Image 1: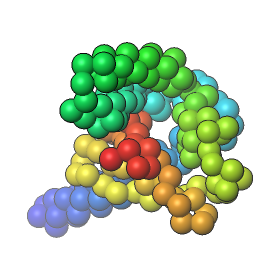
Image 2: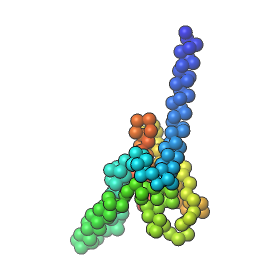
Image 3: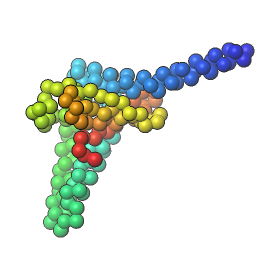
Length: 169
């Protein structure tokens, strides 16, 4: 009886450990496959678009605050307008197709990618942040930093909930 219990506990530990180490890679593969296939429905299942849009809005707000700094009233008004326009553009631009572009080639829009990076493969490394989150760090073939994709646990799977563009931090 004790031996069966010990065997069962070891088996459970192996399953949990396997999930912990393999599931982020499976999530990335599923997202990459959906992006390469242009499978909008699969991308919609793997991405939390409201959270992704909030992530973009936060980055736009932070970038605007850094640019405006301690400027005068006109700078602050201009910054507020730029922030609002930027948020609206991000909300409209973050589509399944745009996310597919980011996963496939490292850019929200291929035309915005610097010429030297176009056509380069992007590889992804996983950094775990406990049991609830992981980050996929993108790197182009020549070593140039790509975007970072942020995932949150969704049941036993993962959903893309945010991103960071290089140099945005």
